[in-house]
Amino acid sequence: MANNDHDTTQPHWGARRDFVKGAAALGAGLLLADAGGALAASAPGTSRRFALADGTQLHYIEAGYGRPMVLVPGWSQTAAMYADQIDALSADYRVIALDMRGHGDSDKPATGYRMARLAQDLHEFLHGMRLEDVVLGGHSMGCSVIWSYWEHYGRDHIGKLVLIDQAPAVTVWPGWSDEQKALAGALFTPDSLYQTAAAIGGPDGIKATEGFVNGAFFTKAYPRDKLGWVLAENLKFPRADAARLLVDHCCQDWRDVIRTIDVPTVVFGGTASFFNPRSQKWIAEQIPGARAHIFAEAEGGSHFMFMENPAKFNALVRAFAG
Image (cartoon, rainbow, N blue to C red; front, side):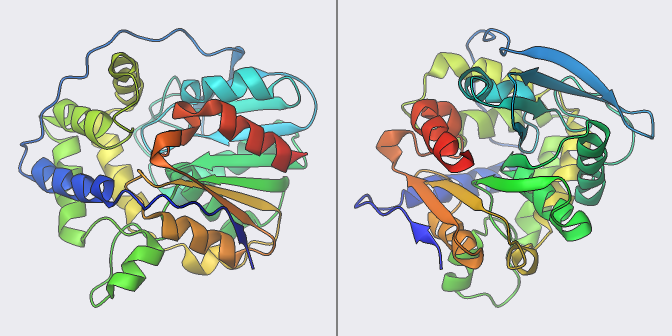
């Protein structure tokens, strides 16, 4: 049974409601926003490249020495978004933040935008880099990459897992009760998922992406002048490929895989995230000894709590990684 952080702050269900409303608007091509802001400074560490067997070059950022800590970003996100983790945690670990294919500064091949392929890429990277006993972290879709990895390769190269705010099943099945939806963290119906993907991959895909960055990803307290850089990082992934990957990602149901995880694991969620924080507690409850840390909205408890409150997040990760 998991140990969960508890607080008296009620979950910010408005974030989830606004996300769903936004998804519906995206399907109609109506969600418009102004990103604004200037690009942030480059992430600390050294940029390097790793060649996969199919010729795709993956970009990664590396800093520090010691036990390896590999960080996988979410859907359409980049390694540079882990800048605060690279900067702080590299004092104790060899921190590597990886751009998956298509994302960030990695190559943009025409194929491979499926969870199973991203898991294969990750395995090839860990094996080729000769990384063992890895503290493997993933944010959002990065968790799904890890779950696909676990399904195919088990604990190979893995010592511990850091799972950051990803629903076990993003799209609802017909007939699910409200309780099932909450524990799964589901956001989409099949129709709204494909409408959203069509908007992202369509002629107004940049505006659709602006809508998510400005209206769903962060709390209202997050500095607005930083959102322009976040948007620019997202748009490094071509929108048509991003749409294809979103569908594959959000059609997965990982609940059976999560129940098989048996390495030390920590789970992070936020009361202002569009994913119901009960789903993050559910994940921790399935994994022996796992703990869930749920950030309150006042603590920057959005989908990107590691960017909004890096001091608390990094302290918890350091305490967990040992």
